[in-house]
Image (cartoon, rainbow, N blue to C red):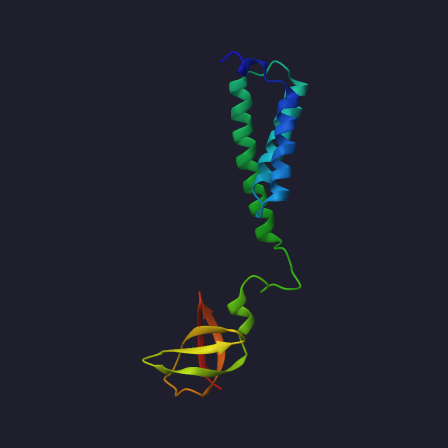
Length: 147
């Protein structure tokens, strides 16, 4: 464990840069907050070079939890706005659209072709060829009603 006693502030700063780069290369927003915590520990170690490695790791854990918690609070109060909020939620893009049933809705379940894809639908029983309006989405199932 002697190598742990030799951790210097720049180790933490390198870890911070690596975590931020990994955040850029991967989807999601999580590693950035760990990178921030590593940068803070690096800064504290630069100011107080006598910190033990145990204290450094405890501080990293505490600052990681705090930064993630703070980010969640801020994003809950100020959600990120988008000009295409349904971009990755394909089913929600169809809400309000009138479609023609490919297969009849029997016992509440049927199928409809949307562009090049066959979707399962749920709604009131209706014969094939009927027009239905999409009123909701439940996973990969479109909720419909007669148009």
